[in-house]
Image 1 (cartoon, one colour):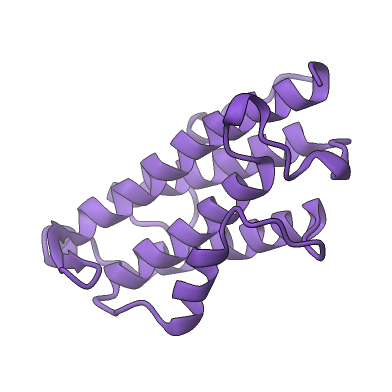
Image 2: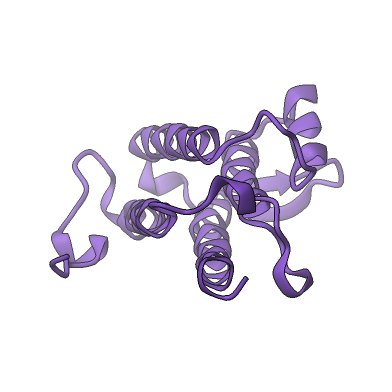
Length: 169
């Protein structure tokens, strides 16, 4: 496999405002790496928790869920009952969930997130936003940056878990 440049090194993502490019780059980089590392991953291991670490399924659910929740807060909205139900279900073994369904949900959420980035005005990044029921103070920019940072944090953890499960169990 030829080594491809990381997403941020390939240039701007069309339609994404300049100050939001790093967020789009991080989301697309995570998506590419997750797909590449899950190629040929055994379906039977998606719920395994090696060394008591979170499962592959949890990380995929969590990345999608966090993006959904943070972009909801970015729009100054409260979480819906469906979002709260999905949050409560993260990491709980469900037999109908497959690698394919988890990746499809991730891809759909990244597509939605990128579309929301496209419609975000750079001048609004300093506008205050609240997180959750307690309305913990942040800004639109803080929420969007955290969506990228949190995605990459879990992507790193996920890739290590995949490697451990593929080669050491």
